[in-house]
Length: 178
Image: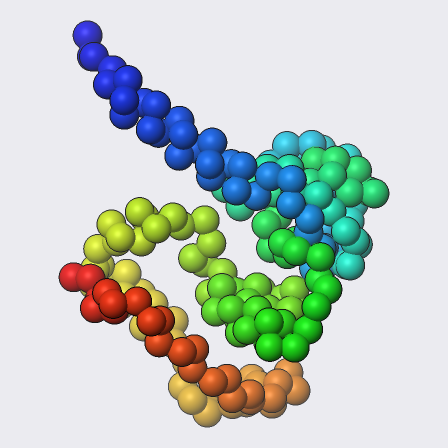
């Protein structure tokens, strides 16, 4: 029979509660239209809908889903469909948020960018990541030639934009972890 370490169990419970409540009862804005689901699953029953720009209350987060309350109903939507905050403001703060949005895959357009694959990973997941040469080779095999990328961009009428580097954090511990 296995003995349960109550201190460890209590710590895990506290961390879980904090993670769940970190999104709880926050305002949000719908970035794009989406179905509101009864459960956090793609094939769950649809109980309502949100439209781009709708204000929502974020009740909880589970994996890649947010539980919301909106005019269109209460239920679950994909995390990429909602941005935390009211969408108000501007100036430097909005510009920084825009850069951060690109870095996190949640640009102001609400369209998915390539970095969205990192969503849902915790700091602990990232700290425990290991180099995997086979996966790197798979990723490299999916690359395209620069001329092909330029043709694709031209066909989609995409335009290049320069984004300034973010400032180096002022923390005294800036050394990379190994």
